[in-house]
Image (cartoon, rainbow, N blue to C red):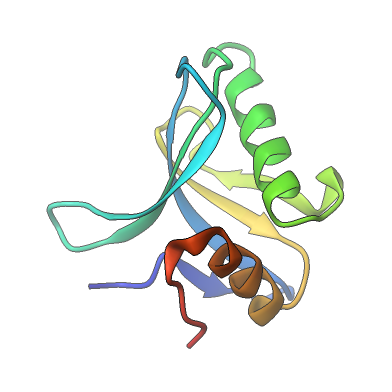
Length: 109
């Protein structure tokens, strides 16, 4: 099983996220694994996947969950895909601690 995150070369952390748009609610659901063994953070947003609305909603959701300003969270890859890479400015341990506080049982490594 691979990690759902990596340290970013420019500082901060990159999260691998699987986004479900047009959901009934905005939420981070925890860690999931694909058939090929890759892990990702599962998230859902109410926004539709048109003109970047779902990506913007994902950035706002993660910023809120991590108690960071929205400008600190950016979709950097997978703009039109369900599987995305999201860059988060901040210390990796602090980001993982914030996710752990949601009861996801995450451990920094």
